[in-house]
Length: 304
Image (cartoon, rainbow, N blue to C red; front, top):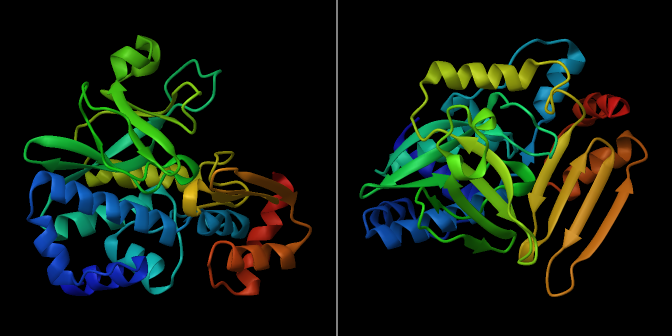
């Protein structure tokens, strides 16, 4: 895949107004200008390419023990050409390739998810994200966490302030300050978020800033795609941010929609059947899928 074809396809999928040469020019600007570009890409990426695990669910229902493809050709064909979404390993592979092809320095990391109050031991290294190096300062770039992904690049710095987006505040803090030694494992940093100023920040995931080799990424992807009973090998999960802080999510048959603005409006309902599931996947998440596939995925909702 050539550089121009990937960047052009990506810009078109995200609805970016800049041409490929203009994207390259902006990527050669000052650190502040590059940060503006990364933020712009993150917002466009998360709003254009939904989070979804439909292939993972379909593989398991079929009894097909394999992982989703995370090589760039496979990811680009699915997320760009086919107009699909994906989960963290696919989103990370795509945006990191775009960032490096813009001439920026980036490397992959793996994180341990820390959601929930009852956690007593570190989780597995299952979440993939990217660190970008700008003039010796490092930034977390992650469009693939689903409902809580930060739509802004976050600096790995003890003095960096939390960044506010339409979907809340996000910050990085040293793992030693946020986690007990038992939970910290090998982590250097913790991503924390909150949706309102009157809430406490909650820990989302912890990570080491060291680059992970491809073998580790493939192992994490295999584990996430195939482990029985894990979050992603069960019923379907989809998430897509909406304007002004809104969001639509689907977990199994449960559809939740929050509209943004000054007075957020929340709606929740349970989908009745495969036909309604197929309609929601198309109209709410923008996925053009055939009924045979959506019917297969829907069959897994009885487990959730």
